[in-house]
Length: 214
Image 1 (cartoon, rainbow, N blue to C red):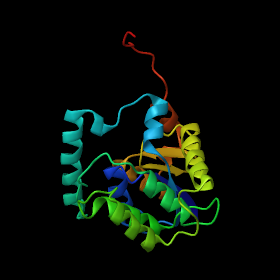
Image 2 (cartoon, rainbow, N blue to C red):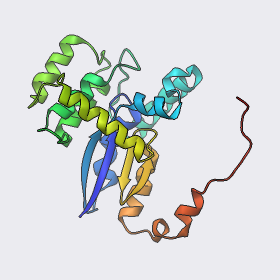
Image 3 (cartoon, rainbow, N blue to C red):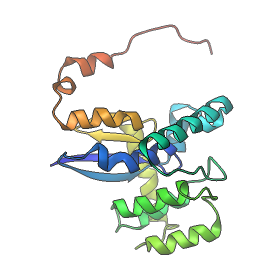
Image 4 (cartoon, rainbow, N blue to C red):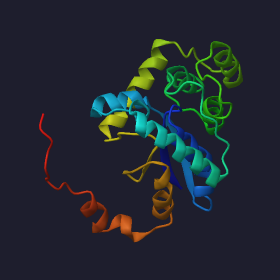
């Protein structure tokens, strides 16, 4: 059985849609999914990028596209009242649901995703976070140093793998980024030889080009 790592941050609507669509995208494939939390803001900071919500025209387009994709895929999606929101409480709660060094299971990730993307409410509302805490019933204190260190380690590991955004799928050492990459993931799982041939490396080869000043 193949192992697929799903790197996610619930702040991303694309990570939410990919999570919901994943069972259908992987239908008929022999694969186990590991859900690995990562702080998206940490990736952005490392690679010197702004998030889509930090550029107003891009924010407007992003959420129009997200609404359309949710419509096409038949996935319920309601944007929280504040976005971007601070995902740290959700990420840490997810890690705290497992014993030390473990990862959250799909049920826990579903609770985190639905908390953010199913109600249209404030994902950081204190009362809602307490309710979520009770639903998850974590094995450890989400505010503990150990849990915080684990999330930091996951984020550093993601950077080390060359991950720059979420969702990212890690399969057989190859990285696939974004909701629309699920078709590639499925093809890889079904044995499409393209992924083992020269085309994969050739397509990603560096091509020196014009650089902006400064």
